[in-house]
Length: 101
Image (tube, rainbow, N blue to C red):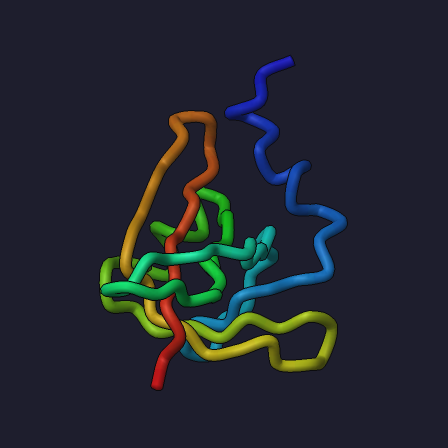
């Protein structure tokens, strides 16, 4: 199977979508737990990211600094800013996100 040609299959049943401007596209969203060392203490946080089809990244012109909203169904998960792009050369790009103030 040519995964690069069929990368949209991974997004087909996702309950999440990203909204950029007035456009909405399916994404895989996750925000795994992360514990960071700060001075002499630790901070518990998350590391939000979403995976989007390369074709959607190009069509929506998603670059560093792009603001997007993640929805699950009709519920807002959060507003974010793209701080990293990690294409996998298989048709998908992982977008590293930070909460948009």
